[in-house]
Image (cartoon, rainbow, N blue to C red; front, side, top):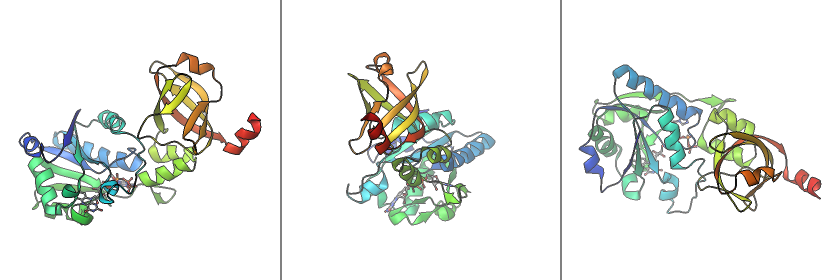
Amino acid sequence: MEIIFLNEANLADWQSKARPNVIALGFFDGVHKGHQKVIGTARREAERTGLPLDVMSFFPHPKTVLSGGKVKVDYLIPLEEKARLLEKMGVDRFYIVTFTRAFASLSPEDYVEQYLLKFGTVHAVAGYDFSYGFKGKGTIDRLHADSGGRIGVSKVEKVQYRREKISSTRIRSAILGGRIAEVRQLLGRCYTTRAEVAGGSLSLKEYYMLPQSGIYDVRIGTGSTWHDAQIYVDSDRQTISFMKQCLLKQIDQQEIAIEWQRRVANHSLYHSVAQ
Ligand SMILES: Cc1cc2nc3c(=O)[nH]c(=O)nc-3n(C[C@H](O)[C@H](O)[C@H](O)COP(=O)(O)O)c2cc1C
Ligand SMILES: Nc1ncnc2c1ncn2[C@@H]1O[C@H](COP(=O)(O)OP(=O)(O)OP(=O)(O)O)[C@@H](O)[C@H]1O
């Protein structure tokens, strides 16, 4: 999979490398079950037509840019992790458009012209609530018309869990609430973060979220094996530590994966046990 960072400076160059494609559109933080349906729909269309499958996403989050940095988005996963997941789903090119105020001011028609038609898009897939162009005025229902009838469009209907839309926002609040079992249902897999182990302490890497304070059953991945463990989270201090230190020696100075399985106790219980 090719990863391409698009900006005003290299836009014309990439337009000149256009080839016909099917593309999935959206931010895709977390690559949850709703996103999987969008990308899966695009993949089937790519297979049917024999065209490459591309994804176009944005960075930083539009909310952060449009608020002038005032709104901070807690990302679920960093770009590298999004790229790993997209590659596993069969994506050929992953475009990441640098989201700036200038980009946000493009009219819906100009976005479609400059970023889809000039990139060779034959068919675009997005969810029922995808929006694009100045003030988000472009909607999936008008994308076909905005392309002058040249781009075929598939709209993915709302994917729900317990009668509510699955969204990145909902997953963020479930993580902050320690509702790890729900997070697993929404993502379609366990939430997995990466951390560094140095001198006996654990630190989460950037662009992952720390669940609510408490004790969690986790699996620790070292690249070669998985170990069952328990982790204590203090979300006020933003720290994580192992309940038993024995694993720490084996994995010192390594980058590990933490697969969050379930929350087994809350903060206060830990303190009464520890005292
Ligand atoms: C060309 C373009 C311009 C946009 N301009 C705005 C804007 O002016 N205001 C806004 O709130 N969002 C704007 N957006 C953001 C979209 O409304 C939407 O949040 C973004 O495309 C991510 O889509 P998703 O959240 O459905 O994945 C723009 C998006 C694109 C692609
Ligand atoms: N539950 C869902 N059902 C169908 N399509 C979805 C769903 N969630 C997102 N999509 C689509 O997936 C693409 C990426 O969406 P986006 O990244 O905005 O997801 P989101 O989870 O709704 O995020 P946020 O919570 O920040 O609004 C868009 O085309 C969007 O319409």
